[in-house]
Every structure is written in structure tokens, then in C-alpha cells.
Image: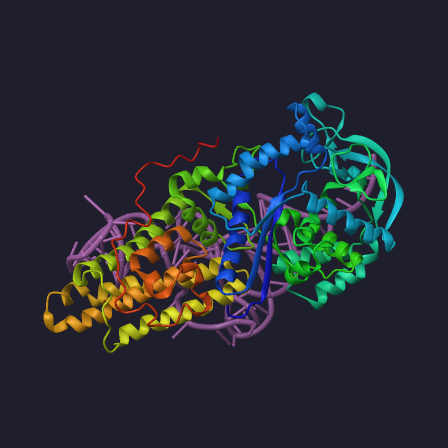
Length: 531
RNA sequence: GGGGCGGUAGCUCAGCUGGUUAGAGCACUGGACUCAUAAUCCAUCGGUCACGGGUUCAAGUCCCGUCCGCCCUACCA
């Protein structure tokens, strides 16, 4: 434990009735890397993910399948969403489902608090409701229907007719929070990140806020409004609360105080819910706003936003089945600037796998371990006086480790990996230049050989520690092959902020042969195989 | 309609407050080497910085306009 500073990070909770695609996977993986990094740094880390199971859409799809919504949700969570976490090797600390009792209890307490303090009132609402969006639409959001819906007004997103609904329900006085929200964005410029997201949020809030209808009485699949059993809580309001309810809001004040406030990582399409509505809800309840709301970009496939309807949706296991979970994690976090949209292509994935993971990192590990085994029977030799070149490697590692930690602090995950990768590149060059295989032929250069291989091995040690949050499967194999555990303990316990220090791997560590960390993939990868 | 973002080598992208011959990775080509996953290392090749004006001693970098892509948001009918 270094600092023990709290770090509570969340993914959005997903609709179980969606089919998991690489966009979901991207968010999960990004949050997992942040969490693993902080955890390994000794921060008091907690990673939350989960599913959002209420709402009319779930009710209807369940009914269509002849099931209760809860049965339907159970099935989807078991068959799709928990397996997704396995597929991607996610080390979440908790998984919340909005149908869990702990959530319902805390959510009701939150709602009651808002009601007691006068932030909720009764009103009538009439509007065009889109079941697909789970929300009312303004007339401007509707377009003329085509085909079977010709002559009707349809939702611009789902192209399906909207329903004219009128209901008496409860409203949250969000309009009262405009000034306080703007003050929040002003006082804490890093509250909404990146900058482009912040600007959009500010522009939106400056345009004025409407009160929010937060209950429904036309169906009953949801959390009951505590003072009016005829109403259930609007699904988005319910969903946002998960971040607080999961860590004990109104149930376990000690736990809540320990974890809160959270860092929310979200796709930019749901930024507004997290950067406007959610902080307003918290302010109304007298709870501190989140620490950060970070909006990442979209994955583009063929230059367009990935979408299932355009058949560009890709299931995460299509990638992991061929390349493995490490490659998935590495690729999306390295190739895409976190916070910006990024292009996905099988060609790029395949090329980076080959060039960076297999030929770069994997082969580096392979050649170093092989030489320690060949020239020293696997026993890590004692280094002699460092030369200029050796010191250069040490410097590279120190600089890279510091830069990577600083980048993670700014959510620049791609930069962090790029910084770490300078060690891979320098080490490969170092080995080629130092020519240990030549040194090995002459007994007179034995000590120099020892120094070179020690330097390379300790560099691998630093890489294993620094890359463990990103590619934990590969680094675990490397840790074993280096024989590091005997002297240093478990890889996950290695303090990541000290990874750039030198002469850490104990002399005499017993290396063992290393299988290829990222074997060459001979098979042709099919791009069109969207299942 | 208003606002925002983007358009830089074949591909994916860096280029902060304007300043010597515009960078990186991958791909391509040539060479070196053999410890290693036919891998590594070095070098070369490659761009009218969307287009047209303007400001400046100097613009990819600022200003105006045009075109293209995307996002947010409004409104008429």
C-alpha cells in the first residue's frame, strides 16, 4: 500500500436485452485497466459494473418470450453479461443488478429523501413516447414514417411509431440546479472530461433545464415509488442510482463514505445523463457529485459508428476466440486515443497483434528468457558495472513508468501504454546492439554477458509489472518464466508506481522456459463474419 | 438555422500558446545480424498539411469564405 487513496470507478450498467458488442467490451476493458492500475498502485480501489434491468422495453421483450421480466433478465445476465466479463478478463469488485434488493432499498431511500426535501412534485405529462428509447420525444425529434408506418410520426432513432401518452406522474425539479451545475463545471474543469465533452455539457445546461418526469404508472416493472405504490421509478433515474446504491447508500454509511465519490467512465452518447441529471440528483439529495465523468469515444467500423442494424456490430468473442483477451484489451486501449472516436478494423487488429504483441513484446521476452536459460541454466546472473547503454535502459524504464502513471491519472490510457512500450523498443535495440550471443562465445566477456542479460531481465520485470493491468494473462506467464515470484511475490502485488526502479529482480532467480506469449496467428481472420 | 469537432504520407494518427528542410507507427524497398515467435536492428522511399483568399518578416498552426464527414441543439411548415 502506497497512498491508499480511494479510487472508485464505474462502467455504465448495461441493458441486458442488448447483445454485447465490442463497444460494451471497450468500456469494460478501459475501466478494468484503470482499476487494475490503481489497485496495483496501492489505492483503495473499487470497480463496479452491472446491468439495468427495469423499464418497459425489458417488460415487453420478456412478454414476447413468454417469461416474466425477472426470468428474462436472469437468463440474459447469466448467458451474456457475466460471460462477457470472463471473455475480457475483467476483475470487477462488484456487479450490481437493479433488480437486487440492495438497490431497491437504497434507491427508495434516495427517492424518499428527494421527496421529503421538496424536490419532487406531482404533475401531468402528455407526450409522444418511444418504447425503444424509453423516453418521451419532442415533436422535433419525430420524422415521417415510411413503409408500413407511412403517414405516421415515428421516432427518428428507432423508425417506429410513437405513442401519445398522458399520465400523472412525479417530477424532479432539475430546473433548480442550472446555476449550481454551471458553478460545478466552472470550479472543477476536470469534472467533465475530455474538454470537448465538457463544452457540450456546458452549452446544454446554459440553454436551460426542464424538470424531469421520473415515474410511470402505466406499467409496473420497476422500483416502486415509496409513497405511491401506483408508480414505478423511470428507468433512467433508477439506473443512475446504481452508482450510489452499490456502495451502500442509505444502507451502509461507512462503506459509502469510503467509496464515494465515483469516477464514471461512459460512452459519449450517455454523457448528459451522467454529467447533468446525475449530479443534479445528488445535489438534491445532499450528496457530493462524482469525482469525474469521463466520456470516451465511439468505435467506428468502416468509418461509421458501429451499429447492429448496419451489421457492423461485432461480438467480443469473435476477437478473443482468435487473438485472446489480452489482445482485445491491448488493441482497443492502445490503438484508440481514449476520449476520441477510433477506427476498428480486422486488418489493423491483426497487424498490431503481429507487430507489437508478437514480434515486439512477445519475442523480446522469448529471446531474453531463452538466453538466460541457454547461457546460465536459467539462473539470473550478477550484473557488473553498468555501461552507458545499460544506464540508458534504466533511464528509459524510469521515465516510462513515471510517464505512464501520469497518463493514467489523466485517463490517457493510450499514452500510458505508448510510454511503457518505449521500454520494449529500447530493449530490443539494446539486445541487438550488445550482441549477447557474441559475448557468450568468449570467456573474457563473461561479466559483460551477465550485465547485459541482467539488464534485459530486469527490464522484462519492469514490463511485466507495468503491463499487468493491460495484458494480465501474458504478464503472468512472463512473471513465472522469470522466476520472479520466489523473490518478489505475486505480480499483482508489485507496486506499479515503483516499477521504474532498478536492480529489483533478485540475482539468482530461476528462470524457466517461456511459451510464446502471443503466438503467430496463421489463420486468415474473417472480417465479414458478424454473427 | 445556431454551436462544436474533424478533413496532415497507401493505412491509423501526433503536431501546445504561428518560427530552421512537416513527424510517428504500420505497410513497401534495401542492408546488417542470428539469441528469439521466418523474429530483431539500421537505412531508404513516401505528403501542393481538403480548397480559395487574407494577416504576418514567417502559417498545418491565426482570420474570412467554400466543400466534405460526424456530433449537439433549435425552428418553420
